[in-house]
Length: 470
View 1 (cartoon, rainbow, N blue to C red):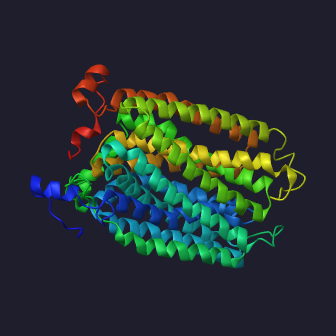
View 2 (cartoon, rainbow, N blue to C red):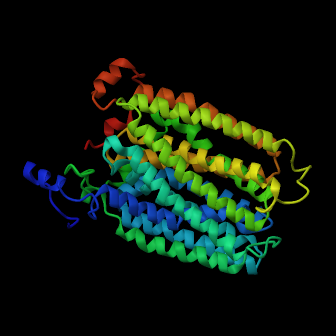
View 3 (spheres, rainbow, N blue to C red):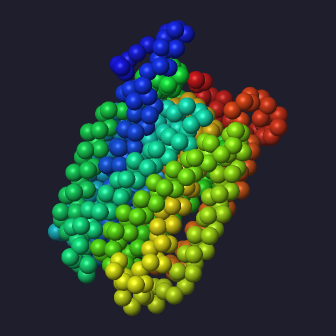
């Protein structure tokens, strides 16, 4: 079926609803395609970062590059939604994906010429590109699916995306299997990552704009025109006074803050090189399981959408408390001053406990971020508003990550980092419950009914009032 089909009347809508969900312009195919793009680019980047230090024995260069990355990401994550609304998905995604190739190339260069400058510059450019990519991804993932199946589509995307981390973890494990005491990964590892990232850049041109995507019931995702610079500048500034976004800030800040601790101070500190690659296979594999589980709860556990939100947040909160508690028990025996005597190999008898913990960290990450994306997707339905919301989330998330990488560079005690991560995620749960209570509509209720049940201060401007309705 052609992607340019017109929905002009009720007869056309009925006809469209009988077509296969695997047609090119369906939300299922388009969300799968953005999942494949992220599989190739940020998925491979995650595998690279997950080894600790980007595969280098000394993480200083990549820590500084990640600080530059997440600093620019914080800015362009927030601006990315507006840029997407102006340029559309093709240019936005292609520009973003190309910077991943450059970053992997800079680490290949660093393997031969250990000078930080190129890596740091590439990291800063990657932050710009990542801001564009993730704002576009957030808009597609939250606005293309039917409103009552957003959790399912988020879990679909998250599973495809994290398959990149699984395969990306296999690359260093296989290529460095006989180098378990090696200092850094070999050149072939970085070249392999660059090939995947280049494929993702080309695949980004297959993504359709929202006004050409038709759901199974015949409705279009949105029929808006692309925006102007002045309008997007105004809308982005209003995000900082939007009470909904302010309630998301702690969750956004926490959601990448813990990566530094988990990658550098658990995986890189406790395990040898080849085992770090193997651990990443299961870390990102656990994300696939976590996203599917929380997606089911958020879409199918109760008829009331708000109740599904409350239950989903509660499940993640309980599981998160248990996992961080296990992390505390694992952390107490070692520190900067008391390092482990010998790094663990996957063949060691003592490998199981730390491995299960690292697997659980991946499970929790996917459940936490899928939960937040579901809440964001429940706040609106149109692509323009959700691209701004997603961009704001990624911007704040990246600001937190920039701080986290410098925290590790300055050798802050491992235990202190763990406590901060645990505290940040814990603080976010009641605020998300409040947001669902105040802003998320049940499927069978009007917005006026929700406002009457849970009034909000009239002085806080709701960005939805300026959004174009679908």
